[in-house]
Length: 260
Image (cartoon, rainbow, N blue to C red; front, side, top):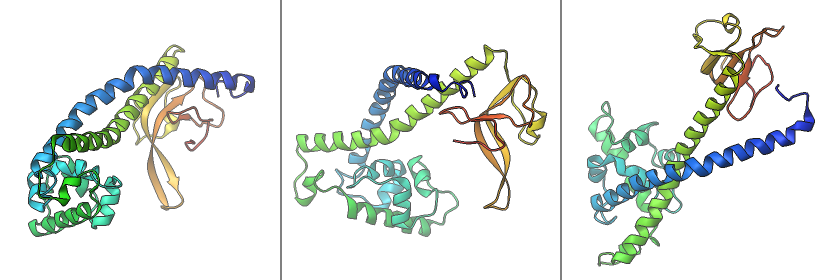
């Protein structure tokens, strides 16, 4: 609502916002990618070693090195996301993430786990990028150039998949810091508001980040918690009593429900 009644200023606002993001991205994103790249290179080397240069992708190998599933997904053509692997292999929700975190599901029966790992291997074997690992069709070991090329390609695929969320999280933190600085400079106080208490009791001149707001869901037929990036109670509460909700990428009008 800051410039909602000043359409002549909207274009300059957009330009300023884009420039602010570009400056931040050029400074922060390369570091995120460099750090991620080093970790990913190590992961690819671990994958090649554990699978004997991609020749032994078996349930036993995954059981011993569950984290390699994340890199195996980047070794297919095309690379597949967690949800896609889950669907193709008929896996329980959350199993792929558990494996990629380097753990085995504690409550799953051993024979069930073996069956799921076999399904993962079947999907990976069927989709494996054989053009990239072209030594698999021969009896010889990959020459150093082949191996290096495959490692670089898989690393790049995995790096993009891992680093992009890191950059997005850093961008979210940056956005909230900018909002916080703008609000505190105008006399607002950052104060947590219990989600169990109605927003009507939120003190004037306060704001809260990552606030759970209870809303009525027509689809679910019940009240649900909806996470909101920022909730602001003006110094002078608005007549209709609604707070100002924000969702990271911009400000929303005063409304009983968050808008995008």
